[in-house]
Image (cartoon, rainbow, N blue to C red; front, side, top):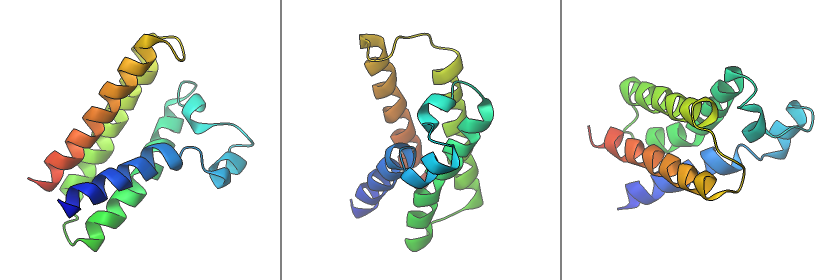
Length: 118
């Protein structure tokens, strides 16, 4: 149970707080990473790299880190966010926006839980 709590916590840090970090905003010249992801796929890669940092730290600390698991988390997170940013049309703060984001979070957490159980 502690493992799953740690994974959810690392997911929240990586997927939400790392995107809105003031240091990242300064590097991006005051722009928000969550908005830039729709302008270039490289920003999705940056987001995913920032996302996996806390996840990797938790997995290393718990001595369950594998390159295979890392690759699955990194690639799947990129694919999910790519689809969310470039393939699904929705208005910001609409009902569809909330539905897409709930599905997005569910998929990311499900993949984390699956990877640690492989």
